[in-house]
Image (cartoon, rainbow, N blue to C red):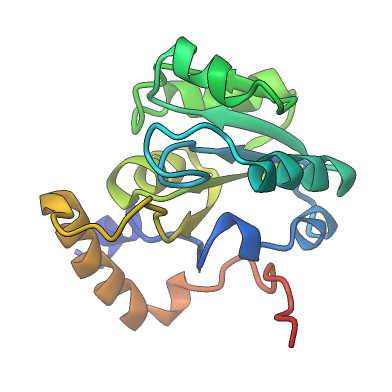
Length: 182
């Protein structure tokens, strides 16, 4: 059973995309970061923000390529990236592995040189794990306090509780976090 559950366990679990030190990822040999959009970078359906736009610039300055892999349609993605220089695949059909692997191919990298960042265990993390791609789960972002989080989010809480007991599945990328500023 634990082997099956490991398919749902992230390599890392971060507070947000902003708590990740992308220079550290680059130093560890990663050459690209693939992101989900909704609830990972911005609340569902929201446009990009200046903070997100600057994050992509920071990631590029760190030497990493970026890519968006999303189940959203092309109009949503094109609107989102109006200030971001990045490649993308929309209507990706996640967690199916086909487009995770296609993204790696488009980036002209190997799976070991790519890390995936998303907010959903049963879609983002599961698909990345099935594809053999390192991944980081981030706490999902919302515009307001979510009162009805749905069955899937409640199931994710159970998986995260089991993940917290499986120390061998945690911190698989090592130190990838920004130092907190005091």
